[in-house]
Length: 175
Image (cartoon, rainbow, N blue to C red):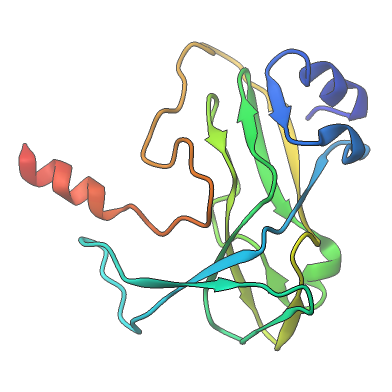
């Protein structure tokens, strides 16, 4: 894993994070929550077709998350990674409140560009605010062929992004 100096060096060699100079910790870059959330509109989610969602704007005064409900959020920071594997992790301070910012999707891919979609759940009603610190991105050097770059269905995402798993089923049906 890169330390503070390794991250600073990486910022000139393949790591890009908006406004990163102010956010570098001992071995991570801090990321913040955008002002937008999405929730799915139906209680039953389908894996083979898109699911309808609604957008919620988080006011400056805060928004209360309901327990056991999935919220899709995103980082303010647009990131690019070339030659490194980024890993998103939640903050201990939020975890001790019973809040998770990603369910299983913490690893990024070499070549990914975009904001990070957050899969937010909490065990207690929890107030969140736009621009609050929400997580940390750690970086590991990529071992092997760094010419293989991610250009998948989430490349270039900006806002909280719903599951695009249904695209996999469309591809399978076309074959």
